[in-house]
Image (cartoon, rainbow, N blue to C red; front, side, top):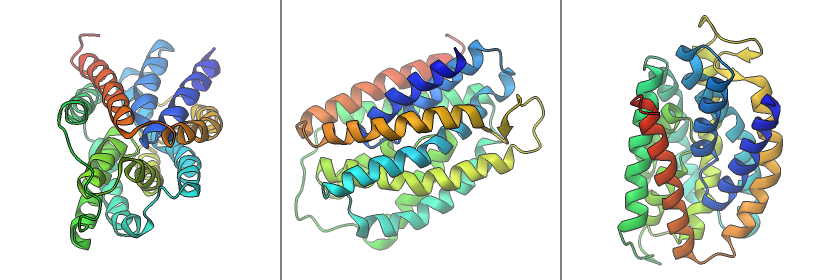
Amino acid sequence: MLYVWFVIAGAFAGVCAGLFGVGGGLIIVPALVWIFTAYHFPPDVVTHLAIGTSLATIIITSISSMTAHNKRGGVRWDIWRNMAVGLVIGSLVGAGVAEMIDGKSLQAIIGVGALLVAINMLFMRSKEQLGKPLPPKGVQIGAGTGIGLASAIFGIGGGSLTVPFLNWAGLTMKQSVGTSAACGLPIAIAGALGFAWFGKNVENLPPGTIGFVHISAFLCISAVSFVMAKVGAKLAHQLPAATLKRAFGILLLFVGGQLLLNGLGVL
């Protein structure tokens, strides 16, 4: 049954990755925390193991989602090139910071961040400003660094931060989602390597792990999410922008609340 749960988590995460450009981490992290806890993994490594494994799976999911969006002209590679520099630096630093934070505190922090983004997406109205000048290169690199840092700590592909930033920068919602999916790749590669490295000497890790990356979970979730991300990307280009934005906000509201309550010990 453990592997069945990994497959279910991968399917849902893949659809969300393609649909919302989030890399699937917002689904994978809480799902893995629940699965690892249910199967009695050591409590002190559950959250970090969920985050490291999530980042590893996002490598595959991002490639699938990115190629699907790119075929539809949804990726702004000029912006991606600038942000990628900061994303890699921030992700490596973030992995080191996360290793020093208590697991429950990490969950609560992730939950608060997701809730704030959800409120912004659901209640703060923003108009697409076509033709608006892009932020300077330095701002794009700086934003990438901050997004990479937070994403590695939270085990996400950064879509919950990248999509609003790109939307603010003047991109359409569909381009924001597509470019965000591409931005998930450097975050995931750097973050997963960081978690594998910082977790290599940690005690109490279950068998079948490389640092804070659970290999079986990585393989199962990656295989399923790779296929399902293409389904989500196709849907993203068929739904109205307003509908896409509301659905994204509702998803973050649910996941953020669950993580916050769990981190505070309520659940």
